[in-house]
Image (tube, rainbow, N blue to C red):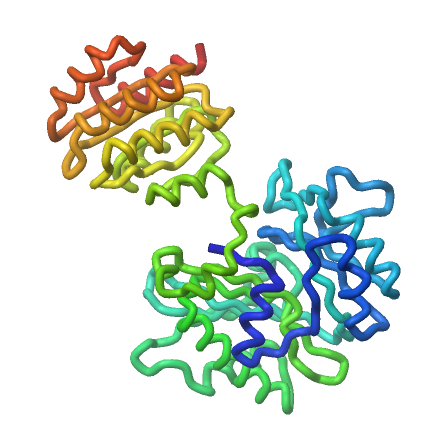
Length: 397
């Protein structure tokens, strides 16, 4: 789960991290009062969406001169004008895709005198199962670009959980970032606070880009992006309260309510599969035969008829879906349950696209019999390759 920048800064501030003073605005009429509460002479007006690249983005409805989702104002009146230009409009960045995201919140904060921009992040290193630090002197840039063109400017290391974090780790980062004097002490202190927040809040990513050095030599978190482990949210009610469902795909949100593992993609063939590995293989073979999957959907090993019905409804609600491939290997999951769920969903929402069903495993003959006697125009498949060929052929005409 992701949260907005202003929420991330509020959380980090609660751990003692240095952030700028700011105000969140939800309505245009609130802008002037919010900006007036902040000291000038510079205000930063930031669109709040769950995507990076806001400063380089553009608004679909923008007029001449209205560029970027992060802009500077030199008066309260100008801050109000900029905020009104952003609220309610669709911001397109390299991470949102061409559809963009509507800006429903604006964050106005005090400007900072910047001497240097740095990069700092904490991530889960899945290879070592440890928390990993990543830092670079090239703050303000996409870290992927730095890694591609100047990888020597990136320092990455993990923390051994047996010994935990020590001042040495903070000093190592400080020296890698070229910090001096009191800045080293500030860095050591900041690293401790970030590490504590990362562990206590079950984060899977904490990115500060940029971490700045001000002209008077102080470290400050200028932008922050936090991501949390969905599997741990049950023990993080305060983090759950920060969830903004308007930033999430409606289909993914609906799937989460039924404990379905669903991710929307850009293809034309909807997939309903049991098991994450089989779902990945299903998507791969669809691509192998010349088409693109419209989603990743794992109904799980213990899916009920109702759960399968909801999964099918979510797939068919995607206007990009031109065909559906159901691929079930019944170990824990019974094939007859899948068949009954598919039939229930079809009766409720209809079937307007080709449907290929491949069943194998527990109660497979019963499942096939249920579908065969349904009277539906369902294409049966003998194996995964056969199913992929048939659905691609049906979609391609």
